[in-house]
Structure formats: C-alpha cells, structure tokens
Image (cartoon, rainbow, N blue to C red; front, side):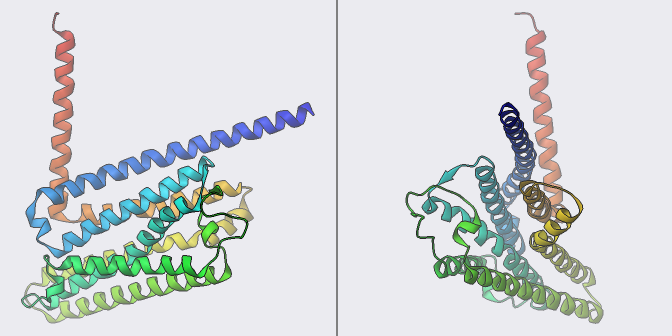
Length: 321
C-alpha cells in the first residue's frame, strides 16, 4: 500500500513537472511573437503609406488573424494543461475563434496572391474591390466564408444527452463538440477543399506572373518581385498544411519511442501549429524592404531608450544623496 502511494505521488509530481515545462516553453514563445506583431501593427498605424496600399492592408489583416488564432489556441492549451473544466456554452466561442481563424489563413494567402496578380495585370485599371479604400469588402467576405464552416460543423453535430450545455463542466477540446462521424467527415472535406482551392489559386497566379515575366521587357523587376511574393505565399501555405501531419507524426513517434500521449500532442502542437504560425508572418514581414527598414529603426529606438533609462538609473544610484 505504501509503495502504491509513493508510486502515485511520483507519477503526479512528474506530470506536474511536465506541465510546468510545457507552459514555460509556450508562454515565452508566444510573448516574443506577440511583441513582433505589435511592433509591425504599430508601424502600419504610424505610417500612412502602408494603409494606402492593399497589399499591406491584407498583411496587417493576416497579422491580426494569426494573433487571434495563436491567442485562442494558447488559451485552450493552458486550460487543458491546467485541467480547467467549464460549461460548453463558454467553450464553443473559443473553439469557434480558433477554427475560423485557422481556416481564414489560407483564404488570406490566396487573396494576397490574387492582389499581386491584379497589380501586375491591371496596374492602371485596378478593379474597385481591390483598391485600398474598398479592400475591407474582401476582408469581410473572407471572415464570412471562414465562419460558415465551423457554424455548419457545430449545427450538424449533437451533444451527448448526459452533458448539459449550460452547467456540465468539460475540458474545452474539439472532440467535445466535434465527435460525431458526420462532423469528422465534414471537417475533413472542408479542409481539403479549402487548401486545394488555395493551392490552385496560388499556382495559377504564380504561373501567370511567370509567363508575364518572359513577355515583358520593361518593369521586369516588379514582376519578378511579385512572382517571388506569390511563391512565398505557397511556402506559407505549406506551413499551414503542417498542422494536418499530426496523425502521421503520432504514428511514427508511437512506433519508435515510448512517449506519453500528452507529450505527443504537445510535440505536434508546438512543432506543427505554433512554430509555423510564428514563422509565416515574420518571414513575410522581414522580407519586405520597406517594412524591414521601419522594424530596424523601431528596435534601435527601443534599445536606445532602454540604454538611456539604465544610464539614468545608474547615475541616480551613484550620485550622493
């Protein structure tokens, strides 16, 4: 009996240590991401030329969307790690935001590729919807499309009879509200259609711009930059698709190592959801020459302010009272 109690205590302590390590890995990672996003959004808000360009407006929209996606997913992660249970009525909004923003990302990438296509092929007669003062119509359409699918998914499913939506405490996970075979099939088909359509759009715009590069004798530099931008969107789409590799990696890890199920889930979450979401906007942001210059100036300004504050505090401590 004593050995059993000691074994249970050791298992509990190991589990607690594992949870603490996971939280200590995720939180600083998310804080660094949030700091970079805030800096880029501050640059957009402080310089009018970015808000007058459809491409930068769409990029700012992507930053906000990815921030909401990571914020909701990290919050869900912390709730599951802490085994905090609450009613489904409070859980569904979090799951909805996480799912809608996840599906919104490929739509934004497709839209940004089409924006480059329109800028190259219709430089003088840009359609009204793609102008900076009307781009919000496209953004609202993306939100509407990405929101319809999770709403339909929740509508075709059903809650277990023993679970009261308003009072029964549950762990806030997707399996709670997406457990029926119909929901699983709908989600799989929806994701395949989403990413297939986006892949076709990105491939189409890349090939069209590539052919245009060979035809044009003037302004080949801007056309070449647009082609590389579309190619970057294809790479960002591949980063998004990494989220669907979790079943493969789970099978490989189980075959080659004796990992705990929660450790496998954390590995997939960190490597195939957090890191790609972290890299995707930063790669695009730091690649842009104009934005990169402002980011560098912002970091230099912040470092100078920190150094001046430290020097001021040191002088105050050294000076006689």
